[in-house]
Length: 267
Image (cartoon, rainbow, N blue to C red; front, top):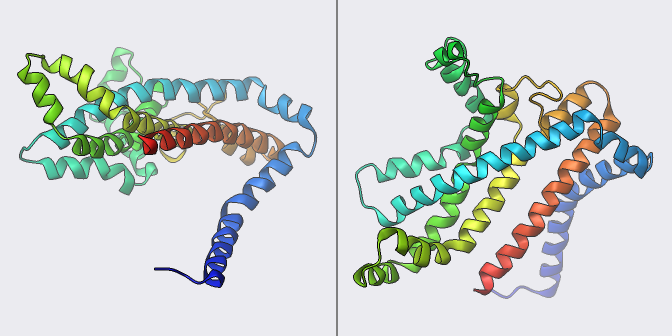
């Protein structure tokens, strides 16, 4: 359907205003408040021990979560795309569950399972602490980022079909050789895009993580928790600085995602 010039301009104006009010203006306000005291003050606020520890912890969680989700995501995507088994629909629903469940509920559920008095609370007696420690934060982040790799890889597997994999098997290739030489190269862009989405989601997670962490600076405080803690302590300048640092990391991830999406589209 071809729209008139006035209609197109009107739609663009409405879209730009909508995005400006909801996204651009708030982010611009944060940037303004961040640098209103100068760049030096900003760097002082993001180089404090608490800020550096929060950044390191956020990146550590990402470094743990991403490989686990890659392995689980590929295996699950292969099962959904190549398998035909009873309960396949249930598996689809479980994969999409993090999209529907509030992250706060995820945190509460983890406490019921792994906390003191929970189903697996006896692990604490063996010196294994899950809740209010790094393992609990990792579990919470894994749950909320679980669908991204699966949902990016599965459509690619459907698109490429099984012809090349079956031909490789006919020529005597093992399942492992077929995966490394045929399947993995074919899904590389979908997998990479899923990884980028997982990184972005893991960096920005707040609801599930705050439930299962102590939120103590230098111990179990991520960047998102640092922003909240500084704002609650009426340290608005520090909160804005930490927000800008988190936003900078997110922008890098977004740019990477855009580049990968263009390359995938060209292929």
